[in-house]
Image (tube, rainbow, N blue to C red; front, top):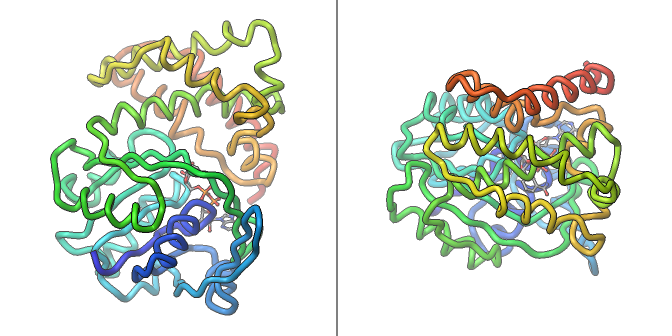
Length: 312
Ligand code: NAD
């Protein structure tokens, strides 16, 4: 894989892009945000870590100005901007028949939506527990450690999967080939569909939410609906495993002191990814005739909050 593009170079895209660039790969950051692209081209990407602040030179451009053909394109826009990003890059000739399109976005259904634009054999899904923050145009915050699990979306073996994993590991991204990435995607989406809207609606950190004695009773009905919908799609999820994964984030020394990203997006006046979490569960529920009243309500409550907080 010679040429790599990060399409959507916000916090997480810039993390992956900068680590690959530092490991010596040919990386371009592609982003819709003018000021961010300009800042990266003028001053380099500014990276703040626990111990250090430094700049790294990476070329950046807008999708409509993309000129090269890429072997690997990593889509890390917010979910609602991913299809227009993919279509723009396709129209620019940046994607050819062997280009691997990998996404690490949170949420469900990305593979199905991408398959409307490019062949499924080009789509790769990944789940990551790395985190990253965006401090301003051209400035990111990188803390902690993580891992990435990935596989071709249709589950088939593909030499490109090994090539991506090898490259990621060379860049210290701690990557693994998954044998069931769809299940991992659904498990992470369940966690996000439970904690993101609840903490956002309640304006609580994860620990504050968990301090309510009946928090378990609040999360179980949401999880039960997700399990029923997943089953209709042929994906087996286990309630105990999901509850344990969610509750393991509660302590202050885990993720307890954090507000989920949905809370951060909303209170910064940005749209959330709710349509790709609870909203996608509701949509699948309608498709399969499975009632999802709890997920529907969370979707509506977040949409109501978006009407108040998101400008423009
Ligand atoms: P982000 O908000 O940092 O960036 C996403 C896009 O929004 C980028 O194209 C960025 O340039 C643009 N953007 C950000 N602020 C903007 C502003 N003020 N004006 C205009 N454009 C702006 O999002 P992210 O955290 O990198 O998330 C990307 C995907 O990765 C999402 O699906 C997210 O759920 C997922 N993810 C993020 C993390 C994390 O820790 N950041 C962890 C796991 C998964």
